[in-house]
Amino acid sequence: MHVSVEVKNTSPIGRQVTITVPSEQVIAEVNQKMSEVARRGKLPGFRQGKIPKSQLEKNFGARVRQDAISQIIERSLPQALQDHALNPAGRPEIIEVKNANAPEKDFIYVVNLEVFPEFDLPDYTSVKVKKYRVDLSDANVEKSLERLREQLASYDPVQRTAQRGDRLTVDYTSLLNGKVYPNNSGKEVSVDLGSGHFIKGFEEGLEGSSVGETREMDLEFPADWRMEKLAGKAVHFSVTIKSISEKKLPALDEAFAKKIGASGTDLPAIKATVRENLVKQVNLSIEEKLKKTVLDTLLGSVEIMLPKALVEQEVSALHEDMHRKMGDKAMETCHHHGLDEEAERRVALSLLLRKIVNLEKLAPDAAKVKEKIAEISQSFGNAEFIEKMYYESRELLSGIQNAVLVDQVISLILEKATILEETVTLEALLENHG
Image (cartoon, rainbow, N blue to C red; front, side, top):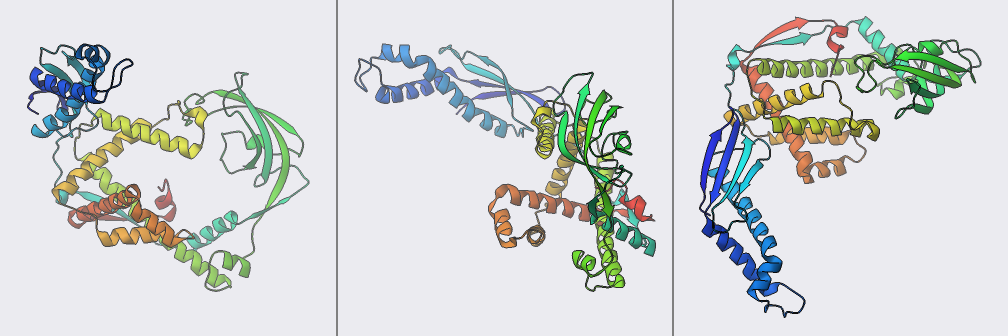
């Protein structure tokens, strides 16, 4: 198909493309489709293939021309973009159509699109990144052991008033300005007093309560609450206590040792296992923080104009992911703080990594992909089935390959960057981990 194309820059990454299709090509396309209709079309009162031309035009003309125009756009647009080396970042948008119903005139349509931005990468050898180091102490192991006991604690019902550390089962309702709002109530809800899992004042307001008692509390959602409709709003809770249970920490015995997978059953064996797991956690945290530092450092050293279409797609993906995890359909239209910023960061990182991968001609390391899939599969009961599922799913396999590529980029940068080691406490390392 021979068309004329005019490209106009509307911004550093914005392009307006005007495509003109000669009238004779449009006529030829329409005639071809009309011939197909003449052979196969059906119309009451006429035999198939014997419909008069005037009747064909009257009954099918508009639809045939519309189909022809659509097909012309489908064929001509990709070719025009390829001929002019335009790589759209997102779906092109048709903003104007001319002469769609004027057979004697050339057909013209105008498209707006954004292309992937051009930017310069920093000199890898000038990159400086901080890598943390932790010297684990016996006190760290003791604290980790106590946290583990807390996680494995049991709860026994008690006949007394509630106190900090107890687990309560409650029913509650709540009102905003005296009115009901979505998801304003709950039944058989577990509340661990002192955990800080609920808004400020909720757990404190239940201390000293008794089974069967109903507590009324006037509180306020935090200003940075994840749901903007509730953020900073005053709320009245009515909470009925159904049961009170006291926490009971497990003894450091053979049963405890088996639960944590210790190689022995005595206290030294338990502590050795706790230390071993703590070392793994520390190493993982150090690697994740190093990876984030490298990516943040690279992002901070370049300026990238972000295509709006890509950012909007990422915002939508983040919304879907958040609501899927929350399982809360009523909140789908709410704005979530920080979502736009996170989407912009992800798009910028994607563009940055894409450029490095292309520049360095990187490809996913097959051995590392296999290793990562095997690692994931081993965490499930049916490892062989999970592994097969990853290899047979293009989407799942692509996700693993992209993760491996990111690791390869990080390794490439670290080979040339200056690494500054800093010793920190375990608490400082794990703060805001992940």
